[in-house]
Image (cartoon, rainbow, N blue to C red; front, top):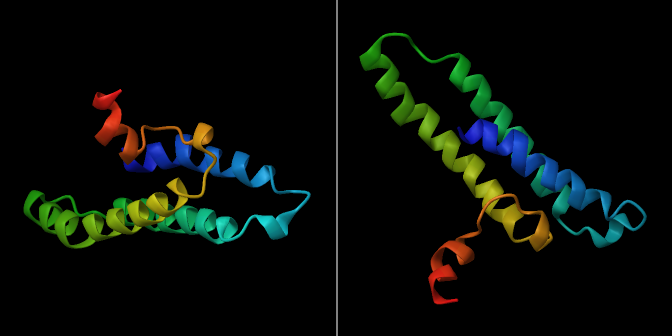
Length: 104
């Protein structure tokens, strides 16, 4: 799931990237805010999943109206991090790799 991908792939990559700036944090730019934003939005998503209704129709509506927008918020933060992370640290194929890999 998205939660697992963020917790087991994205956040560890962000932590490794931030560690490289430990001696010169002023060079990190917006990384800290972006990476903390991922954690914050992912925690919100996790909390929303825990509140999902158990009635099938209500659950479907909840996923459309509540879960999906929060998933998009997580994705927006991860997309921002993708542009900040050192290329070798990003744990999944990037959009660029997916789109252009057939040309190599």
